[in-house]
Length: 306
Ligand code: FDA
Image (cartoon, rainbow, N blue to C red; front, side, top):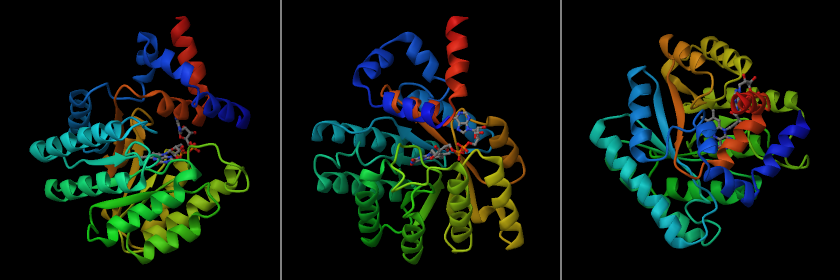
């Protein structure tokens, strides 16, 4: 299992396979299980459908590791258009942004400028910017940027993601909680060395539960992002023991994964938000979804053969 995960994460970095997949009709059809479409209208249509089912969304315009400042600027413009639509349609949605898409590799001050403009726009649109967490090469710079924007006065418009598989996360959570920064807790989706990340699933799960408890009692509204029924049941139990109402936190899941669970939790009165990716640069995102559950690849292969 760990080998397959590693193989998919290695393939996720293949430029050649990426080019072939993203430009083939079959590739696009396969990706549609996890990706809501290629343009803003597709994403908004999927967002409206989920909102009607009482499930909120966070919109992700796919793309990472841009090569030029112009590309980063264009990526930010897509998010500005999304924020305009969120506000005009009263969608109650927010956006999820990757710093490598905002040009952090080229110039950290460019990423800071672009994220600050998005956060300012989100404040006016009644929305929120969640900065996704990428590989451990970006943990420090991501936390630094989010703290800087938060400290500059955008306290309710920016939040970050913490990965339970990283050994450092407990310390990071403590620091972020002191500042009242909203966190999305997930397990982590990248390939990391054992020196930085727990290699065993049981240790990741244990850390997830430890961090979840820290978040829930902190008084800030956080997101528990998982499809793992054990993690979800433990979160519900802990919230009940502490007398926390369902509105004190939200559950988050990925578009196309465990729709049944998303709807069931929403029907029970929990706040549920779905991470909704769209765009043409879907390959790395798609490969990470296969890595999480290699059975997906088998399922897709059967569909192709059929
Ligand atoms: P786990 O992997 O243990 O899976 C539990 C169960 O969930 C599986 O048995 C299966 O039923 C179902 N499941 C999980 N993944 C599936 C898949 N791909 N296909 C079908 N079923 C699947 N990561 C990161 O590094 N940085 C980030 O910013 C984010 N952001 C993010 C946002 C949101 C809203 C979510 C839900 C997740 C992320 N992630 C992420 C991804 C996260 O780190 C993790 O890789 C996935 O959520 C899978 O882990 P689970 O917690 O679901 O548990």
